[in-house]
Image (cartoon, rainbow, N blue to C red; front, top):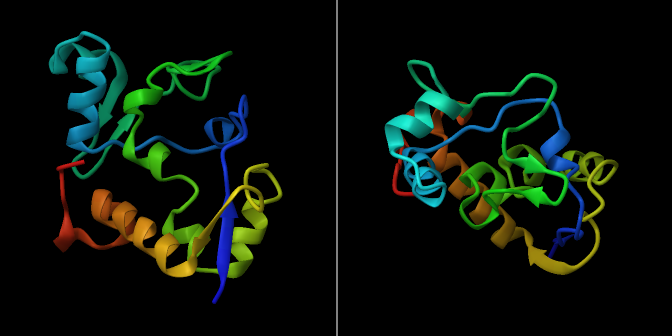
Length: 145
């Protein structure tokens, strides 16, 4: 049976600094707003960009994320689902070559806890459920994250 090893390396923010966006679920919006002591409306006005099918964090000028501090993630206890499930995203665990490529920039790949391929795929499925519009699984949307 194939296993994947991963453990976040203390102080590493490599995943936060990669190109791309941080997508949100409705549950993420509620949790982060509450954690910051803001109304949902205030949080959205300040930090969220909505399109017809997606919700994502706005990117501040010259920074990858409003919540990335020198000490790490300012909303770590309630971080977005996408961040919480990293690196067990479908695009990384469904192809051996993608997991290997991920290890080139993520120092936590290949160290720490062992995950069976089955467990890694379960976590990846949670990513598909949280963001069906990103994976073409629109019929399975769940906002209970």
